[in-house]
Image (cartoon, rainbow, N blue to C red; front, top):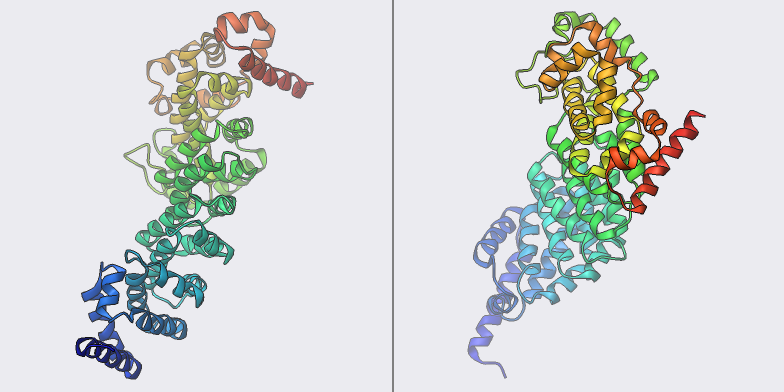
Length: 466
């Protein structure tokens, strides 16, 4: 038999629930405000005490209201925050199961895809998904089985709020940890995000990909092309993350494809260059934008000169020069970090490509970064210095040695043409000198595995020439 105190508590609960059931939109909004204010941070036992052991009765009303009204965005943000109080409470596993049993995950994912719903409500939906994912492997699998990765990735690409996008990154990071059954699905979803138009989404995807890559341990074939295309970005924070990922990827089986791709970007294809030249010739406005300043720190394709040469100002329709500059930068980073990578790049004709990029008078940043990276190779390998000197000529070579970073501002059109049309072939010289020269003078000591790997590049180069 219940005591008078318990009867009074039950009476208050029933009165509260009746008030909710009979309330309209405005009244329910006030009820939610008060609930959020008084119950934020409470544990499950504390919530039960607040609702006289009947907290689930209010939770089921919240979830029912959510399912009925989420399309209209009626008090949606407050509903989600209130449900979050239950799901995030300590010892709240019962509440979590009750929410999931009524299709809570599917509702949250559907909210992310509706255009009419406000960004704040979507952010609360993401936070609830975080709570669910952090509750264990079973719940992560449930999200993934509900086509969650696709919904979450699409939302990250479309969201206009950087704060919300960062919350999505936290969710994706959670889904890739402790989720062996679906971690590859998350990994592929992150790769699929790289071509999206949102720079913030690209940046966050690249960051999370580094984590995912270390967990999975194997690479997807499409990752090389996707990462190389990202180098065409105008956003330096995205380029930085792409280069950081490239630094990780050279430790996997895509190393050779990645290095080949970077070197190939140093010299845009004839097809793309022809298209660009046609645009330049037809773009009369470029003359009014300072085209006459090209080669002196101002790109012919920028709207205005930049006081900072590291700021990329190319038109979005011309990403290949951005890729060229970023590839030169990435190659320099890789070569400085690892001598063996620098040696492999030599067999891929990196010196020829860097000199050609230095002759690109249409993009000063390509010239500057290629010059700095070539300086690195010249300092590391005497044989490279010898062939660069012959390819440039004594006067230009001394100018290069005196200040590689500012060389692009001192080049005249003839010198630029010499660089762009250079025929330097260090790989050919390595073959002519023979393996003993390569091993003792050029490379120094190597283990047998490394020498076999380098021999592969030498053999491949011979076959391509034949």
